[in-house]
Image 1 (cartoon, helix red, strand yellow):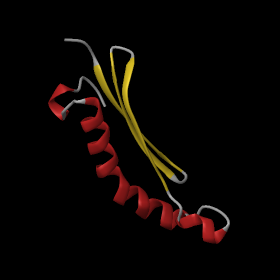
Image 2: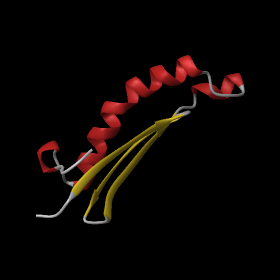
Image 3: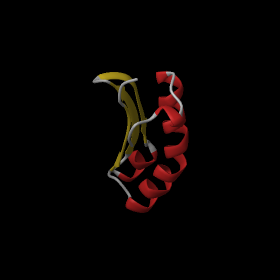
Amino acid sequence: MGITILAIESSCDETAASVCKDGEILSNIIASQSVHEQYGGVVPELASRAHMQNIVPVVDQALIQAGSKLSDLSAV
C-alpha cells in the first residue's frame, strides 16, 4: 500500500500543499499572495486572511493532482 503524506506549509506570503507517496512527489501546489506588492512588504493581517482563503483550495488541488483522497493519507 505504501505511505502517502500530505504536507502543508504556510509562511509569510505563500500557502502550499504537496502529496508525497513512498518518496515520490505527486503534487506541489503553491498560492502566492500579490496583495502585499502595493505595500512594499508583507502585511501580517492581510497574509493571515489570505492563508485562510487559500488553504482549502490549495489542499484540494494537491489531492486532485496527486490522484489521492483524504482516506488515502498515512499522515499530514
